Length: 437
Image (cartoon, rainbow, N blue to C red; front, side, top):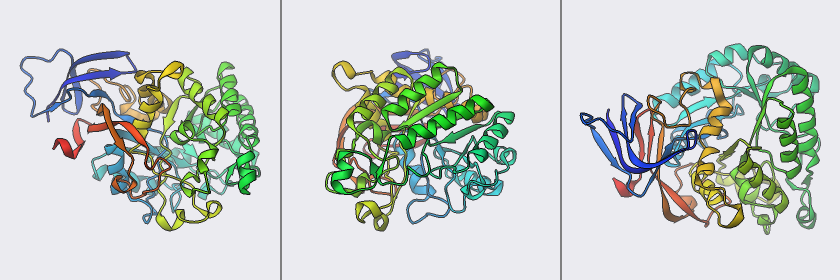
């Protein structure tokens, strides 16, 4: 199908392009930007007047809940939420049930996702069998079945020797290991250590739980040369350690959740279980450091940390509630909110889009296979994964209106700006705002 996206403001962080022009698509690829051939005859024209035409978003952390947790989310509902949020590619952790530690399970997930013709799904394979932290998985076979890296999800490794062997093995094959830095014994609380947790009587997770784990990871990276992606950094001290590691030339990248970028521990209020998240919400100084780290490139990507949770598991006392929140449909507007904030902290819309597109594509690198050359950018000849959104539309986050099966979000009732009008995946229209139908 040939599609013409007309009159939009094309913004491509990878090249710095920012221009009002038309964009032509044919055969699933971008064939022209700005100078459309006179003989180009589109089957469909999308009017993008007043809208921004950007590369499709790449979310490095989104749980789809299938297989095993279908009562909290299914591929149909969560991928529908993804395209409604402009997300054209996402990485899902391996903590499904059963765990993604066998090639057949990965192939089944990929097959199911591809049949839906919506967002591209890139699974992470389990680093150890059953995520038990004992025996390593068959990384070669899992990579051949479609895994883009290996992770323990939210299960920290207690055995440092196992982690070192995993990094040695991954390094020898050029695989990347995705780790959330969390010391196993210190990270068992339900809120960030501090005055609020003490006052509420909640068990705390100290910053040291993150920094101790980071020190261990960096020493092992020095010893093995493995590429490590650090998932959802949450503290100012953690950001500083990542900056130091990058300055030393260690092959590490990292991301942060939209929750940690916008919220702090006081948002818990009177035990609001919607704020029960992993990692826990920390203090204002941590949020400021995260915002600065995103702005200056210390933090590579912003993620939704989409984790749909059902009603029964969320409407419990704070300490007993299951951690997690829906976020796929909120990633773009919350990134825009950060990028276009007034005053000296404003980084601009281009940087806000970069941490959702070109930067996460760089993190994934060659693991994207044939998509690697053009993922996260708009380039002639590149794959047509595109998000068209209106940056001026203001809307209120209403959980019941979200397409995700999980309706719990800490941003319920928030006023946000920026709404997706069209999402194209591989040149096919995967989502269109109903008001425009």
